Image (cartoon, rainbow over all chains, first blue to last red):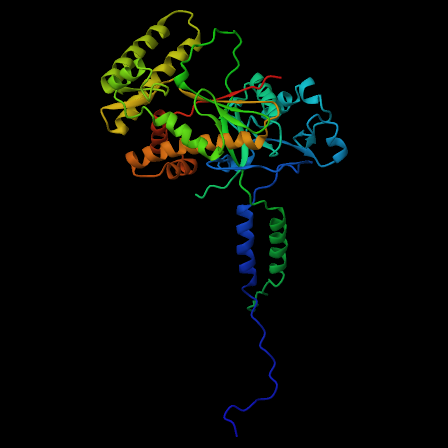
Length: 170
Length: 265
């Protein structure tokens, strides 16, 4: 009767997957290019405040030129109580061992100098141009940052950057 | 020899390998860009020097205490809404911008003039710059020819010369008969307390950057018909000489002199 006669059960044709590797490779290359590896996984909790018109640090060659210092509340709550204001520094994968440490042993000075010595061959810049980027928590006391500045001043590491999350529309 | 077929390589597992790599990069990727306010720490002075007298009109002093209150010393007093801060900075820079040098002299002498409490601009013309360059060249030559001279002094003299050369180039680019320059002492000063939060501290820096950006952006659009953001981003990418000169002119017109004062213990 009907013009469109139902044919017998036909097996669905297989989807051609030969272009799948191409698609996957494309995605792969995108992520390979867009990737920036994390320098460290800080054990202090840092919630960065937001601001506008910040300088983008990406041009500084994949961040390897920048030294990051984290300032936040230790994730280990028992340790947080040890510190005056509850904030500890996290440098180079090591959390500040004791509250007084920062001031007693000039650890920041040593840390920065070591970092600079290690990459001196790669980065042809005087130490005064190598950026120290402070990633501090919203509530972190600025006094600690100024103590860091004094330490950095001693070894002439004169460029500092205060990290923010930029929310200005470019 | 008989012709033999070259066996095809089975590429069926290629996708698997690619997937594996893809997933690795997916997991390790952090997409957030690092953004920050870049600032210079002043050089340490070994020999204590007598403090330089700075007129109040050249200081824009921001105080931020541990209770989160912000004051502008000797100007507006307490700032309720922090977003207004950038407008105040703009006012600080722009109040006397349009005054001619003669008008500025009159305003400086008259305490009732509305611009009296704001930094004044000087206009530098080509002749003056040329004269200074000649002077600096002679001075540099003389220093170089002196026996047993400290290389730091030669360096210093060379810096003075290059500063005036930069100004000459800037003036050429500016396209007017003179280069307006804000008083070299004019600066913004941030004073905090030990427990002032980082959030408030960066908010102040954010407002300062916003103001400087606006000033330079306006000037940039007027002179180069291009936004300041576009120029500086292009410079980040290709570091071209032309953009460097453009940026240095904008920086000469609106210098970002910020001083951060260490809180007392």
